[in-house]
Length: 51
Image (cartoon, rainbow, N blue to C red):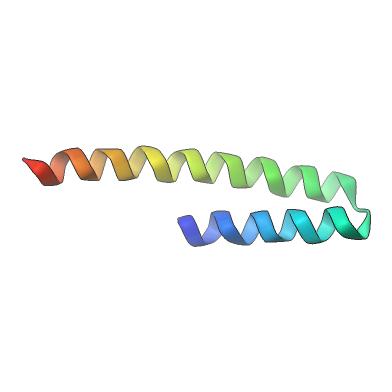
């Protein structure tokens, strides 16, 4: 999950540098969603692992 987030962030940076604003915004929003899902799953697995 974290690998997909990093991929979309890199895609957003490259698209932003090349001037593709719509694609960059879309990739950045996908990266944000995946990052928050990753954080939530990490916290859940951390809590369950301590039990």
